[in-house]
Amino acid sequence: LEERSHPEGPFGEFTGYYTWYHERAPVIVVKRVMWRNDPILLGAPPMQPPTGERLYDYLHTAQLWQRMEERETPGLVAVWIMPAGVSGYLTVIAIKQQYEGHARDVASIATQTGGLGRFVIVVDDDVDPSNEQEVLWALATRCEPQDAVQIVSNCRSAVLDPLIPRENKSIAKELRSSRGVLIACRPYSWRDHFPLVNRFSEEKRKAALEKWARYL
Image (cartoon, rainbow, N blue to C red; front, side, top):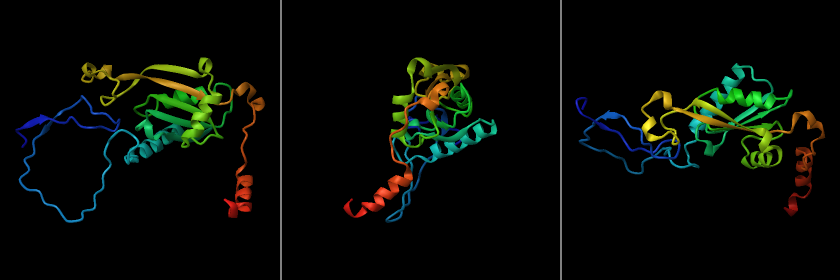
């Protein structure tokens, strides 16, 4: 009924929270419900991660990657939004370092490219951004907090950001937040002397598995 409206929600959103923000929506009067036996149901409920709603993460990952390539970001290897990163709040970028300060330059581009965001983690090209254990390992062993952590203030945000105070959600200029940049790369100036990673190459790992397959 176009002449009748009512505040929508509250409704769970992609961040995993119910939102305080709502708009007035037209009222729909349901007079009849029909159903089928043994229905095929497809859904992606926007609940606390991890959920089945990964489509938007994939789309936003591809979108961010494309935009960074359009800006000719040097040494870009891979971009990944973690499942818990809800469409951009936790982004990991792998690069092949080319110069001093390269990782920070890439992070700066990422924080100002796209929409929502909270944390950007930059790793070396030997770390798989989609492997959470590898990313955490790189953070634990290659990120020196006093040198490799940066805060970028007054970045773009949105009304669905749970950290935007309720009273600010109707004020466009107050829809802003900060970004945390974490550089989890080998220090460029002595990267060639950084301790070697202790792991098998894929070739040796494959050969060992084939040799001992009947015992495993």
